[in-house]
Length: 355
Ligand code: IPM
Ligand code: MG
Image 1 (cartoon, rainbow, N blue to C red):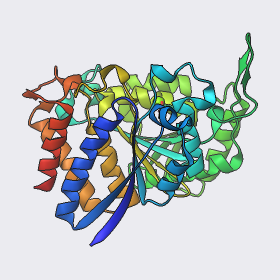
Image 2: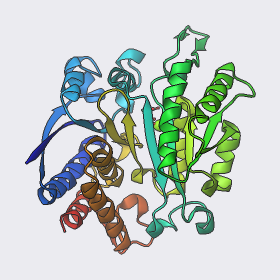
Image 3: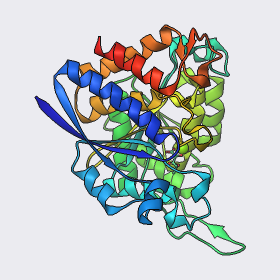
Image 4: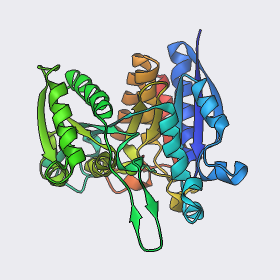
């Protein structure tokens, strides 16, 4: 029997609760698809800082590198916000992404038919929305030098090299080839030199993908177009910070940020995580929506392990749970037949997965 090693990084806040549900579903799917998971837990974020003094212990990197994929919950919380920046949970996560070389963050925003009323936008605007945000993850203003802070000045630098733009552009075009074959590249080339380079390089790379249609859009306009007419988008290719912002915006088309998964892939192994944060305000209450994490586990099966049948089973189980009216608290107002807890939702999806 095939054995997959998965590093589990539960993190802070609701992280542990949602990862537990994803594990439930993974175990259900593995027992019916003929493979086995071996999990190794590792620490990251505030919990890692509390125990080791470092938000990203070396051991977590090693554990991740000896696994086939990493399933990650969420990190951060007010408790650690006043620490020096390099000790903060978020710095651990950024270093982690960099160490693993996961330069491409794939964030699908797909509207579930069953939740069409949960969006703040009109049903006719969002029905059928299926967007893939391809966000560059280990460059741009998050990592650029120089950066610094004095009492009355703070600065960061947005830098991209040709190589960094080329590799993320290739990812976006390849993904588009398997979808509706349209890439919209997002930048601020009317103001930023770094964005003009981005636009030029993406245009050059597009010549290698004649079957894919490329367009360019300024980020401010893209933010507007996303709520005006989201169906115009197929693949949105973005730099780090623009993708961070636009993917949160795109998630609201779908009704709850608790639904959206992501895959971060690159040079070594991939990291699969919900796009939402650690939500410390609701941690421990059993009301978090585990679907984003369960759906991330499905992306892990598909992208990292090539277990497409198992991934399809999970995706169908999620849809079925929603169709039958099961809702966690975030979606309780929208056509709920039964409001369920985090762990009830996990069990329902696990159960449907195994059928
Ligand atoms: C995300 C988060 C992170 C980011 C934070 C927690 C560092 O917002 O994954 O979108 O900005 O990348
Ligand atoms: Mg974000």
